[in-house]
Amino acid sequence: MSRRVVGITLDNLEHLPKHSRGCVFWELAPHLKEQAEAFGETELEKEAWVSNMLLEWGSCGRLVYSDKLPVGFVLYAPPNAVPRSLAFPTSPISPDAVMLTGFHILPEFRGGGLGRMLVQAVAKDLTRRGVKAIESFGDAKPEDEEQSCVVPSDFLASVGFKTVRPHARWPRLRLELRSAITWKEDVEAALERLLGTVSVTTASPVYQR
Image 1 (tube, one colour):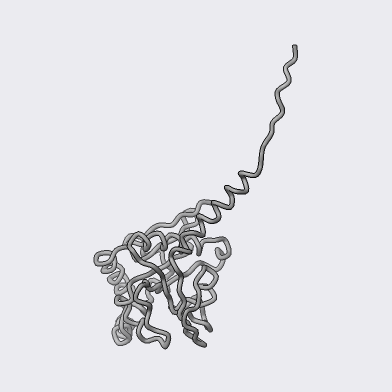
Image 2 (image 1 turned 120 degrees about the vertical axis):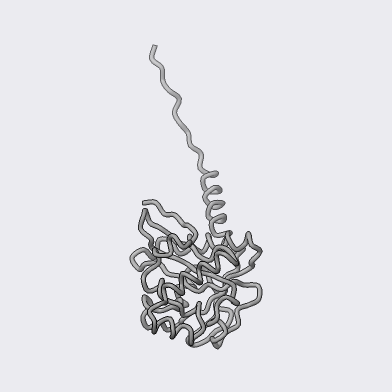
């Protein structure tokens, strides 16, 4: 089973789960969100937002595939492109951080490291662009995780985020990008040390006269 991570573009945006394609909770101000929902234009607004991010800021998301099946995604953007970010009691996002707005792995594919694969991919992308951290508002009491537009805080914690501003319902969590990048490097270094201590001996061939 092969696993791969690719950047989100307008060509593969349809591979996000249907609810996520139509969720504009973060991308639009509340009154514009209500208008988009009333006219059934949320997916168009989501596409317009992603298009604008790609043109004005650069890569804003990643998709992870298991073989050919899309099984998870992450979206991120500078806080000034996320109108809803100022409405939370634990706002604002730190000035040195990019905001994670969406992060989801299909339930049946969790526990296999796909979430960390996505985080590592985002960390490498943003580090090259001079960003020091990712922050996100988590939902500490999600009622319906599959239909929510706010990432459960327990899920964020499971992929390395740490709480920087506690709240009973809406904590703000942070991931230092340096630590995210070194996960893979630390694992590879540990394997190298382990393999370096194992010596393999082979018996000399016996030749018959």
